[in-house]
Amino acid sequence: MPLTVSLNDAMAMMPNMKLSNFAQVKLLARVSKSGNAMSQPGDLIGVIEQVTLGDKGSHTIVINEAVK
Image (cartoon, rainbow, N blue to C red; front, top):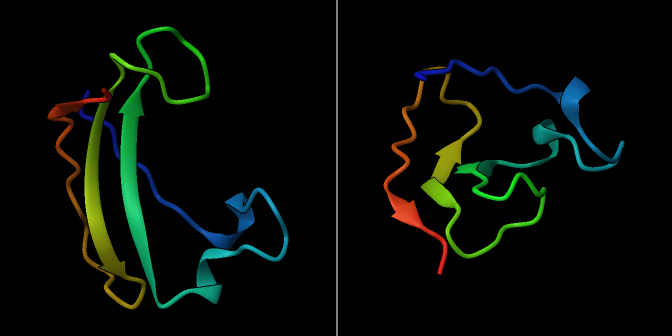
């Protein structure tokens, strides 16, 4: 780390849930202690609560909390 990631509509897990469908999004980064996809106690997370999609700047997520 650090790691740079760019998100776009092509990465949507469901065709009707594209990023461009929303005015704001929540950015969250999680490091899984167990390696599982589902969040579990002990995982480390960082969150930016609201990001406006029109904002073309970069955002830094600081992973500074543990899932309880």
